Length: 264
Image 1: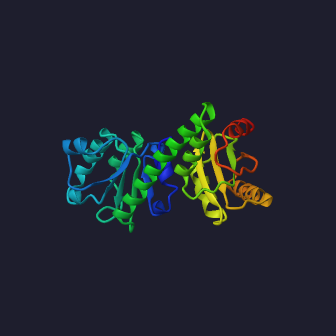
Image 2: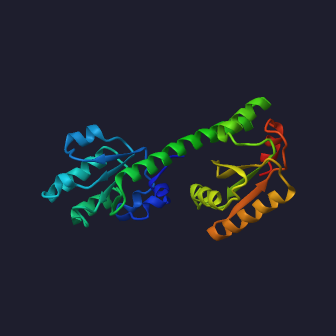
Image 3: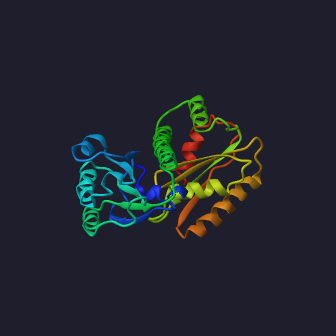
């Protein structure tokens, strides 16, 4: 599941961004973040890649605004995800550029005080994290569908989180409706969860798979997590189903995972 502009807008660093055109293109995937500096013409097509989240101050065209239209055309032809303009030289765009972006569903943002370096770091990290969680989801699917050893389960658990303890339980939050954002849900659960728990959350199928570990788990731990998740999901105004496994005292279990996941 690719990291999209819609996902990017959930990040705190994007709060200063204002969408001014191309609202129907927010499903576009983001592959990396780049800066448009002095490039123009064929250089843009040769330099920028598909899915690139393009940052710019537009210094190169500040005294020649009519060059902005072909510049945006080139970015669209290159398959970039969007153009985000820092309002150093432009705080509004010409109508023909707005019309172009709207017609081709190409998002253009304006933002002010956020530093390029911070945006690049946060967005690139988010893209890499999404790629990693996608790989984890593939591995989990493989575990559920194929014969594997208990040691393979344990090794994968430590790939997810080196702090995992043997005592743990698993929960799955399945989206009931075709709405909601699993990554927003993961952010909210992570913020609200008791920091004494070792927690990993992975987007999986139509929901989120969670693993909770603690040096010594008690029965009330599941109840506490169930209450927290129920309250959080109610606030989200989106319908989900929640399923919990039983307690496990080893990370090597495999058949039990398969049987219990079928119940979710």
